[in-house]
Image (cartoon, rainbow, N blue to C red; front, top):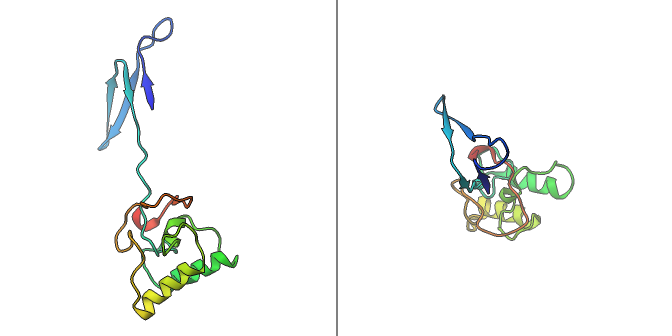
Length: 132
C-alpha cells in the first residue's frame, strides 16, 4: 500500500509522479490518494526444471542432481515439483520419466503453457526463463 498526501510537512511539498511508458515520460500531479500495488505472480511450466523451455529427460536429471547435491539450487522450485506435492523429491523425477517413456499422465498444470502455481506451498519461483 502506497499513500500520498499533499497536506504533510511545513512547508507543504507537492507530490509528483513520473511514469515512463512507450518511451515517453509523463508527469502526474497527485492529490491525496492511496494506491495498492500488486506484484504479478511468477509464471512457470511445471516439469521444466532446467528452465530452458523444453520438457525432456534433462529435467528429471536436474531434479536428481538437486537431490544428490550435484546441481545448484533451482531458480524456480515450483517447476521442479513435477507432481505438485509441495516438495522436490525423487517422485518428481520418476513422474517426469514415467510421463516421457511410459505414457503416464502429464504433471499438473501449469505444464504445457506458462501459468501460476495455484497450490499454496513454501516452494518459490524467482525466475523461469521461458515464461519471463
